[in-house]
Length: 77
Image 1 (cartoon, helix red, strand yellow):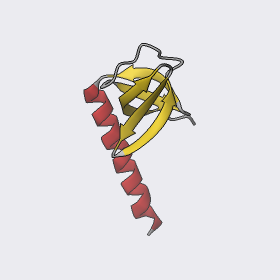
Image 2: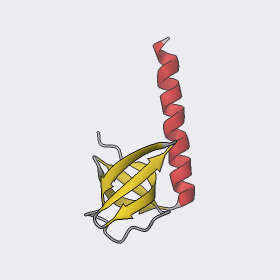
Image 3: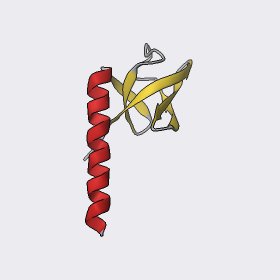
Image 4: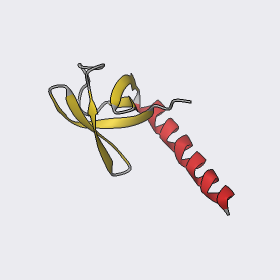
């Protein structure tokens, strides 16, 4: 199974960018989405921006991912 995570683009320089979620930053390639703009939410998979998502959908998805993480932690105990 593959998972793309919505993250906000906070910096860009040529074909590279920096995205952020929950104070975690990652450098990513913008090679597949070279017209991405700072402030947009992008779908990130394996270090590449592969698409855009609007802010509302991004926040809903991030919240669902958090809930899944919490449920997984609770299931370990």
